[in-house]
Amino acid sequence: MTAALADGERRYDVVVVGGGAAGLSGALTLARARRSVLVIDAGRPRNAPASHVHNYLAREAVTPSQLLAVGRTEVTGYGGEIAEGNVVSAERLAAGGFRLVLEDGSAVAAGRLLVTTGLIDELPEVPGVAERWGREVLHCPYCHGWEVRDQPIGILATGPLAVHQALMWRQWSREVTLLLHTAPEPGDDEYEQLAARDINVVDGRVSGLKVTGDRLTGVTLAGGRVIPCEAVVVAPRFTARADILTSLGLEPVEQEMAGQVIGSYIASDPSGATRVPGVWAAGNVTTLTDTVIGAAAAGVRAAAAVNADLIAEDTRRAVAARRSCFSPQMEREVCARVLGDRRHGL
Figure: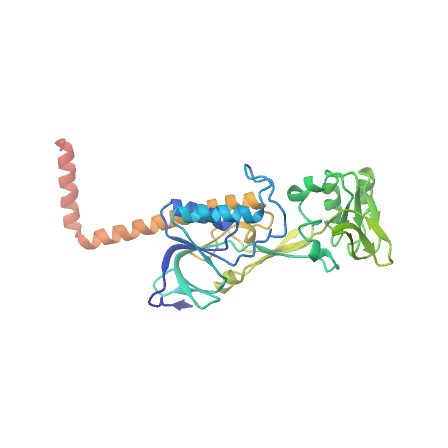
């Protein structure tokens, strides 16, 4: 579907949809490349529940809000623009590029799109899990393992990857308990591995979390038994925020690990280019396992690819404009004069 750009609607070289680490890093790169760039952000970062960002070199333990605030300042410092809002639709322009409509009815146009809308963490439906998410309910040991080191940790098993999770989190604590909950029974080899690492296994469904004084102190089983723990590890389903990409013809792809579907993502090449010309994706919307620093790096890579594509377009237009001004005969005469001047040292 194509549309026309209405009077008064601004056009940018690139519009970045999503203002997290990937989007802001991409926008910063593009602004420094002297591109007109607009970041549209709904203000709902995935890591907002977390107290700090980790493993981001030179920015260790910065809060998510601080990281984004500094990033916005850097982008605008190079001439980039930030707009608060949510994109509700995207369509191709008849003259090329894209038109984006926001919730408030306003619209902008873009020569290229960089979509960095991230993903949604779909949590297990256990009372208390959503409320403690990002505090004591965790999923990534590299993001939060150090903070709960040596504490009793419960692994809320919901699929065949639970044993892998338990063995991994054992690196950070000697007190790890695998709560079988709704997961399949481990095999003999898995039980042997768990026993060798001194990981307890508890059967039965988890009915809720036990919180004392605003701190997690355990999980409650369906029969009423309480298993002490100070952190609970879950395995969310990671669902790409892909509505804008879907409207452009890109459907999410399911991602499997060890025979279990762990989420969905938008396929792209290593630069972030999707199969829709002019549309790039970066960060968790296309790579579910990206941490914050990985998403930032992906944003830079995608931005460089977008700029390269724009340079190629600029060059094509310049060549076409030159050809429209010079006939082939005139072009040969100009080239001959230039060559003659060079031979005579002029």
